[in-house]
Image (cartoon, rainbow over all chains, first blue to last red; front, top):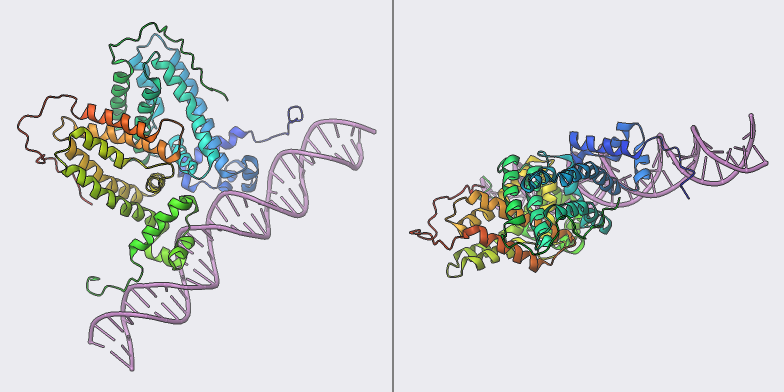
Amino acid sequence: MTGTRRKRLEQPREVVLQAAMDAIAEHGLARLTMAGLGKRIGISGGHVAYYFGSKEQLLVETLRWSEQGFAERRRALLGATEVPRAERLAGYIDLYLPDERADPRWTLWLEVWTRSLADPDVSAASAEIEGPWVADLRAMIAPHPDPDGYVLRLHALLDGLATRIVIGAPGPSRAEMVRQATEFAVREAGVAPAVEPVAEPGADPRTNHTDR
Amino acid sequence: MTGTRRKRLEQPREVVLQAAMDAIAEHGLARLTMAGLGKRIGISGGHVAYYFGSKEQLLVETLRWSEQGFAERRRALLGATEVPRAERLAGYIDLYLPDERADPRWTLWLEVWTRSLADPDVSAASAEIEGPWVADLRAMIAPHPDPDGYVLRLHALLDGLATRIVIGAPGPSRAEMVRQATEFAVREAGVAPAVEPVAEPGADPRTNHTDR
DNA sequence: ACCATGTTAGAACGTCGTTCAATACCGCGC
DNA sequence: GCGCGGTATTGAACGACGTTCTAACATGGT
């Protein structure tokens, strides 16, 4: 096994991933090359390829790593049960959407979507990375008569808004989008005065695969 | 001017565009090369580049051309004033969304979005190609208290659903998505059975910027 | 018939991801 | 301490691709 005899690994994986995020933020994904990324951290381009298998896997791993930080903040929102649900949903949405045009995290999402078309592995990874968002949103709105439909609609809406923000399409400001999305999310979350019967809150059984 | 003395143009532009669509449908955009596309129609790869300026412009033009056919069908929906609005909205949504995973038209949309990040020209073209959809949707729901917000929300929702369909993400079927989106569209369009008073149809003043 | 202009093929070029052979480095057993 | 097996790492080679360039070719007006 590789457990005991762990290679020296002078460059922790995170150094490369952080460098990739920085490079994307500075010059865009289109100008990210293996050689250029290597030069940023003092290793050869060929070694980056050896280290991650392929550029595609590097990008997927960078996105996955980037999402980890968001998972923590999202979980904090989940735990803040004293905050009204509307505010927690607003926080979720604010966390979900890209900060601005060319946001590196969402740049990666677009790239991953595109590559999903040609590579089933990327497609699977994409779904897996999105998983925790789905799980946490479900927990946040539970109990809900149709959690699947709710998540689908809200996430679809958010993906569409995110796309517009990240490519810089003409339209309203990000703040306005957050407002509109939050209104939608709150309305659909518990608009129904039709209360569902005996449903103890916070005890939804769908633990979902929050692996890795 | 180039009006009178029109080069011979043996290969009409449409032949190339159709070939590009076919190639994308068959093998995906990732495997579309200038040389390969040329071979499909019996011209050299170098000439395709000369003819369209760059691969990027070729892709944008292919998307624009592909959208033309949809514009006609959309306009037909607009004119069908005898059909109830709910059905017309359902038709619009059915037209908007990709047919299936790897739908070539939506494959192009994803690619154009991605390239929008690096190239302002593509970004502008993307907005321009979307324009007619916006204009027709506005006309379809007029009069509406907040047409901008309505279009933003519905199109964002549809873009998110479209992304899921085209990349083949796990989730409900396309038909179910159409159902959900239509429900949303109808509800937000004129939830009020409050019929609009004296509003002669098709005379809404917001002509929208259909510049090109 | 001739010439200017646009068209076309095909080769040359530069970039990039990937692969490969060679070398440097480390941990371990002797 | 000292090789030894295996990993890490480099840098070059390779192949694919978009783009560019050059040279030939066709066409339409005069």
